[in-house]
Structure formats: C-alpha cells, structure tokens
Image (cartoon, rainbow, N blue to C red; front, top):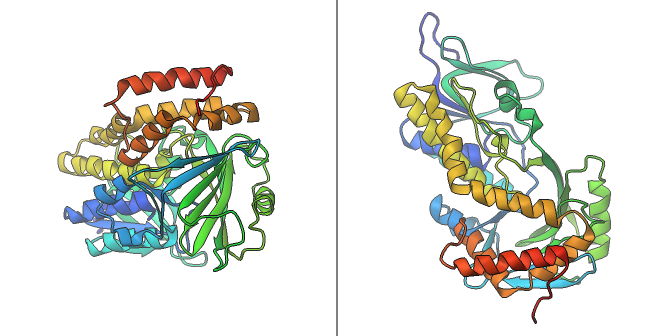
Length: 403
C-alpha cells in the first residue's frame, strides 16, 4: 500500500483511523463523493455505551429504524434519597442501539459506498514533509508492520487517540470520565424493577461521586453501568453493588466493557497540514449527559466536509472548518451541559435538588424537545427564563416544586 517510488501519488485520498460512528460516517460520506478512502479499524472493538440515539440521528444520517433494539418512552431519575421522578418523553422516543451491530452496519455501509475496509491497529502516524501522510499498522499483535499513504488522515480512534496525541498539541489533556458497563440478558420472567421502554438514571454519590449510573433497555438485553472522572473509583465493584441494590445481581451477564469518555472538545482538531481528528478523538461527548453517538456522527460529517474542501483546494486552513462548524451548531449546548455537571453533580445535596427540579413540567418538556431536535428550543423564551430562576432557586435551596 505504499506510494509509488519516485512519484508523489499516495495510496488513498483519505485514510480514516477508527471505525466507530464518527469514523464510519466520515468514510462513508467521502467514499460516496468519489474519494479513495481506506477505513482502518481494529478487530473486536466494542465501546461501553448506553446506546441512546435521538430520532434526529435516524433522519439526519439515513439510519433504518430496524437497527433500534428498543425504544424508551420515559426516563426515570433516582435521587440519593431514592426519590424517583419519571419524565415521559411524550410523542417522541429515545432509540437504543447495540454498538456491536450498529457500528458494524455503519462500517459495512461505508464499504458499500466504496471505502476499503482494513482490519488493524494503528501504530504510528506521520504527516510527511512532502504533503503525503503515512499510517503504520498491524493486522494483529504478531503480524508485520504495514503502511499506507494518503493526502489526508482523519483520526477517529477514540478518547485516547494515537492520532491526536501524535499530531495535535495538548490532545492528551482532555478531561475524561471512565465508563464501565455490563450487558445483561433480560429473562422472560422479570423479577426486578425494570421496564423495557424506560431508561433509569441514578444520581447517587455512592454509585458515582461526580457523574451518574444507568440502566438502559436493549431489547432482550440491558446495559447497567456507571462513570466517574475519579481514577481511583472502583467501577467494577460499584457496578456489582449496584446490581445487588437494584435486584439484577442474578441476571446473566453477557459481556463487560470499560473505556475513557472525553467530556470537553479539543481546542484544535487539526495539525495545520493534513491531519484532522473527529468524534471521541476530538472530545465531542456531551458533558452532564455523556451522550456521544449523535455528536460523534455529526463531527464525522463535519470532518468529511472539511477534508473534502482541503482536497479540493489544497489549503490546510480548510481543515479548521470541521471544529468551527461543530461548535457553531453545538458549542452552546456543550457549555450549558458543562455548567450543569459542575453545579449539580458536586454532592448528594445538590443531586437531590436536581432530581426535585426535574419534576417541573417546563423542565421536562424543554429537555425532551432539545434532545429530540438536537438544538436549544427558542420558540418559548419565557419558559427558558422561568427555568433559569427555578434552577437558581433549587441550587440555593429556595425553590419548592409545585405538585
């Protein structure tokens, strides 16, 4: 796969490193547009993920509804006191996907569009003095090192991205939540507090001191897990205790997974030459909620658009448009969610007030409208003002929710 000796012709126009939702989306978009694309993804990778996707994702990225393994029509949040608040979705739903099948479908679509799928682990990346970038990889641990060249590289290789660490300044300083979950088989006879169309979110300090724990439906399976930015927090042991607390300790475990999840976009996504990062590698997981699939695919599409512009013009400044486009559309949401996480997840006293606030109909309505449409709701500005003062009142302990 090496560039021809004595020529300046690379093997590909673009090499995408990482075949998750972001990388597979970027590879599919560019291959559809006629570019020579290589999609490099390591074997057996399944990211620990609750698997929630909004209806907007299905529409925007032409995803068949058949990929959904469940539809959640409500979210139940549980306070430190064990107080439970159910938030009905209304006319919409929260789609649930299994990442092993969902990601593979995206990679297969990219291949069908013309991308060359290669199985392997990226070992090194070079941007090249001659404008040609090189990726070095191994198909498995014991195989020989191989290389491929391209005019541009898109790094979509996760939160601890090798591409980002090699090519983007300060990429290793992104704050992360360490997530862990267990995929559990749902028995025919359900003998615990569980519904196949409800997401449960636990805001309890003993389950997560700075984030949350969850139980998400996945059809015949469910995901139970938690996250924390505290490196010393015992994720596996706490998940075991959570399963005992919730009555799921005797349900059959299918698999266990863990990984870091970034919660702040990088300040720069490109190296100023021919390399760009997207998805988790660029830090685009929403603070507070930890939602990542939609934002990863959006970043992948923005990255594909920026790379196409770079290939057409030869101007490296075109790569900057990926981050600019993403932050213009979603930067304000990330900022607000970051503030929410900072204030509400600090201790159990604040978590209790946060759950109490979620009883409010205005909070529920605007939360779901923003989630379904992936943008802040602007048609009801008075409701936002009302919620702001309620939010402030709850934070100060002055607000009582009307029943």
